[in-house]
Length: 408
Image (cartoon, rainbow, N blue to C red; front, side, top):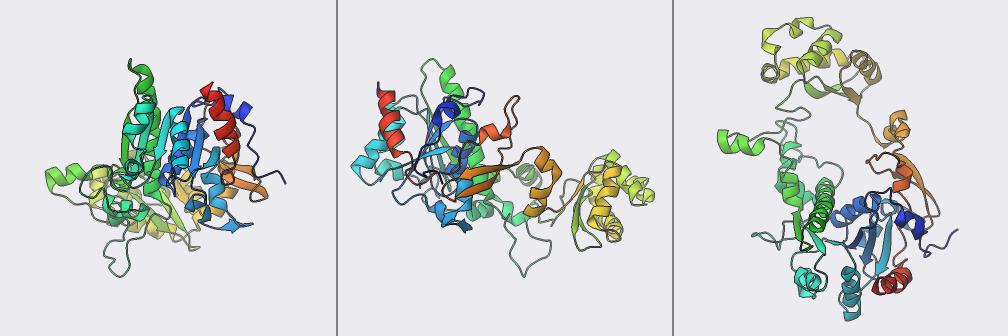
């Protein structure tokens, strides 16, 4: 088995100019999900990401299922990154971070607001040494406002941002509204942070003064930003959107319908043309010709009737039979996939969304989801260069060779 502390072959990977962010250096002071997710996106795109961990490692290294003592999730979460260790409570550790930030394009951090300032690593200190530094700060509630000092995790972002209210089934009072099933508010804030970092670096490099900027992102407002037309609906019409289960109040028919084999089929017959094809397929041309259903607004009013008609048809077929029939007439639909379905589906495979990445820590190849980006001339495998490394695997390389070369 390869030495788990050996650095990856940086030369070719870090200078591959086909990767759009090749040459961008990012320091990650992140833990758990949101900050590291942002830097993982940047690393997949070719940035040199240096993940600074406490001596005991990112707590996320212990999350989820394990194999040979190592978390499988971290194989993905830490991929394409260099791992170094620094104790931020010590002067030596802080000096190491300062030296890295002196030579970086961007810093991504997701500590509680005020923490970096308290230990002498606030934006004013960092940018006094490196005026070009872009600093992305991801937190639960943001760097200001009355809730800035409150703790938060992903569930809080879903709850306060308005998403969890919508995931309940109408009239259900005995069970709590379910969460998304993944850390959606962390991931969303991370995606926004990655986009903001790239945008800020672009703007900095175009400005005459070349100064970096500070980006303030939080879990709650990242979720809130996804609430579509709900704010103007409330502000101008006094409407508060209520849970709709598997349907949407703004489009019909679109829902998830029961099938004869106990499985479910998602169907989206939103447009007028698709609606008519759907009704013809299920043998309800009378509804397609009904003036009440002539447009989306009318169908939303009569959605209960439409859903009942569609469900009456799907209940007579297996999910696959219903999907085949609808796809034959170009109606968007899909069975509800679990991970086994995703991993075995020929379309995911044709799109090279599953990559076997050798992981020396785990001792075998680990299936990774490929980055969703597709760039001309770049294979998905080119964007995943190595799995999440051991704690401090690159201390010698980064604090020795890399910083020495940068200082010369």
